Length: 237
Image 1 (cartoon, one colour):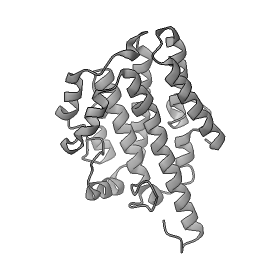
Image 2: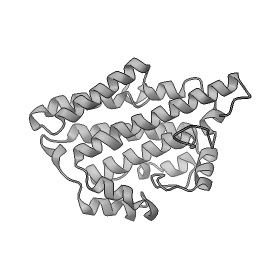
Image 3: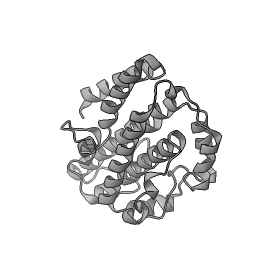
């Protein structure tokens, strides 16, 4: 995904925002969401042929670069694998708990064990030591497979919504599930409060789409700095 594609992605996000609450635009909303969402995942997720933002981030990066923590970036010090894990977790819990009231993908197929990590929560308010641990031990192949599984499930959930349901508000009992399932740390309860005030549309427009876009752009900036560091070893990264 080049700069022009990113510009178009932002334009399409505005279009999605404009139509998502209109039941008469429901079919268009679903179509727009599916194409919009696909650009945030590996092309494998939707069996597409377009070079996506995730494809761009991962292309040409060795394992050490993906795991590097901390990184010297203006808006994050977290590793690329942490960002990929974080956006997958946030999308998994918001779509499957808050929107669909169903089982998280994380718990559907032993993903914690597959990814070789012990953290079921979102990553909000995560300690530096835990970020360092996750960055060093997570199974990257399984992480990328988990992301694809989350993306596919989100697409099924959104595609199954009926006209008018984007206006529905998040139910309090579903917010409680976030804590019951250790998806959110108590120290990060403000993010649960934030999500709890959203409509289904609001969750689709942020956790399922723009949140991914923002973090993948952070990953792209980390990649750029790391690659410049490789060309100029005296440069900080």
